[in-house]
Image (cartoon, helix red, strand yellow):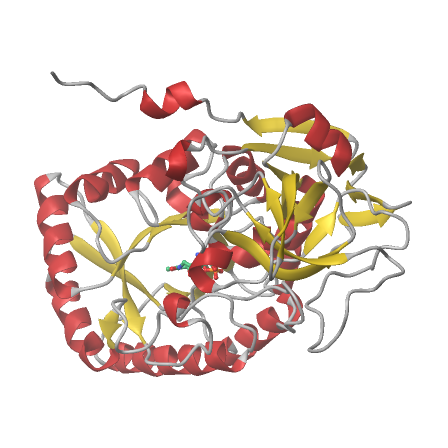
Length: 433
Ligand SMILES: Cc1ncc(COP(=O)(O)O)c(C=O)c1O
Ligand SMILES: N[C@@H](CCCC[NH3+])C(=O)O
């Protein structure tokens, strides 16, 4: 838990607002973001990199809420986008196209056109055919596209296999061994301007060494390019810094920044980074309420009103999120970490071990397994560390309208996205006789 989400007299607060009040006022499920936490993480990043020319391009996919994008834009951020939709959001939120980098293996012609019209900072190109498409399109529009090649450095990020992106068997980037040749090709294309090199090896990294290994490989390539007469303006080292969900011990933003700066010492290229999770992950929680307590033959279930459509990380990656009562009952345990093998539910606290599950018709619809909690029906719970890849990965599965989102700013709560209505979900559909 961060200082921005904290207990005060058994009530869980976001900054100066009790989460019980938010649950009451806006209903559940509801995402709650702390503006101070968002600002703080961004500033830590800017502070860590301040000794060199840099641009922090927030990875929009982590959380694309307009209020969050607007806050980062005002703090000076650029943006890393992966779709035309994300570009549209960034512009709608007041972000500058001139600070946007466009990543992704499957950019469509329409998306490229949109980005060329907006005059973004750089296309992070991921294949030879993408270079061809961009060159042809830019030519037809009378434009010159700024490009960087995303190099796959074949470095093990030591993270969940679904979110590891820098191994040669992954679909991302151009092969390390082919990069030089492709750079030569790009440099000779009339409608492209080679400006940088980038890499991104994966997400939720909890060690510095893979970042450094990848950066060193990329730098060796930059030097080879320079020897071949192709000089670059920027180096984009991607995102991926992990956060603490449970007992992980990722490097701090300051430590990570220091390590990157050390590898880049003596180099003049501008540094671009694309952090997502670390800026927003611990700045948000998902509020939910217990609909039923069900005591099964083998397990107890706390059936809550949030589900895998609201937060799919547990179902998708078996990810662990702390689940805390919004109002602590007396003698309840302080933490809800997984009980040790053989450990029994504490009688003193009246707590039980629950499977925290949603209403969706899938056994994979769980928010947490085996959580010890002293709770009752109707209690509100906070699923912690839900600011990244929570709302942005939500869906309407089971025709569930997506949750509301609020942003707390000191003692004030702003509704930054209304809860969807069911009518909105089928408004564009047609019945054909
Ligand atoms: C190209 C690219 N940049 C940046 C990010 C942001 O990653 P993270 O949220 O782990 O910082 C991702 C997602 O992993 C990505 O694919
Ligand atoms: N969605 C993932 C991270 C994917 C990163 C995207 N490149 C998560 O929740 O952990």
